[in-house]
Image (cartoon, rainbow, N blue to C red; front, side):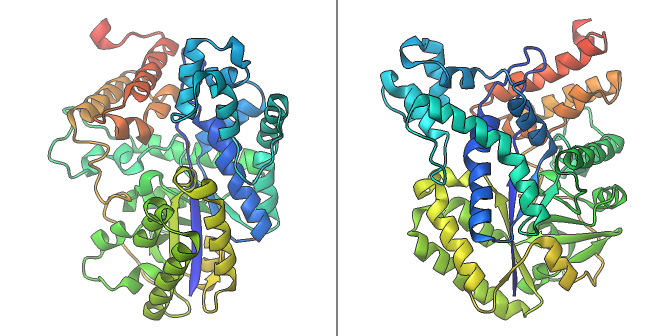
Length: 443
């Protein structure tokens, strides 16, 4: 049986359009620590993973590489301990919430920026130089791995929009919808097209594969993705079961399908979630043994040409693992390469062996199944209504394309939304200001 590992790299647009400042440190943090870690382990083990880079993440990494990023968190990391202000200490505790007392928080936060795969040096100056070197080499290292055929790179729509809702918000089946709906398939197409162009600028090659943000897909979205030049897309098995309620055999998710010219692959949810949320509690060898046992069970169901696709977030799970997940990932990559009857491949490698043979009409959905995490709550609906008003008044200006990102709607209605609420409102205000208009409610 073929085994495909797919890692999704994403951070929303954290740069405030008014101040120009990065309001959260996660592009910087994950680039230096987790994106770097995955490249090093791929090089070390030559394991054929597929990595998905969201275009707006690439653009923000570039800001750091070119020293265009105005980042108060990084400024705090560069400030000597004795010169830190109380505000800077608060910022460093965002990076290291369980860190030591204030007198050593700067050194501890700087140390926390690095993965165990790196030896950044002992002095503060050496660590800061290591950070610079890692950032400069990050994207070139992935391009090199791809060019050598070790890994594959794929991409998403530019600002991580939930495409079925951008195409038509009414595709969400939630009973509590916004009073003002949203229907701009042309924006969705623009986000797909722009994302492809951004990716190609950075990696000098066009992507074949596409991860629709949040796994959000529909038949209309699949057609647009195909028409913009992509060969295949990956989404969640939830979509398969919703689209084809007549088939429930597990082997059904282990083959590709054909939708409006696009090859569609479905990820295996159970094992993906075990890596994301459970295996960090286990001894690494036991966790990988359990995972391989599950894969062997899948192989008996699907046969040699079947594939199990394990797909998940490639940055956030590792904080819960021992040594940032390095022992687990080394064990996983090493044993999968040697396990008889299991053949690791990139997604394109898999599709070369098993082209789609069956058509499917896709019911709109996400990796969670429904759209309830992004629409239906009063706070989420108000955000959609604000976006819709601005879009009708101003057209598809860039700040509104950013405001179409899924992250803002995900966090509305949650306990900690302040940073995302401020950013969403800032992008709306910036759209009006750049268009020399005022929102109707302020006119």
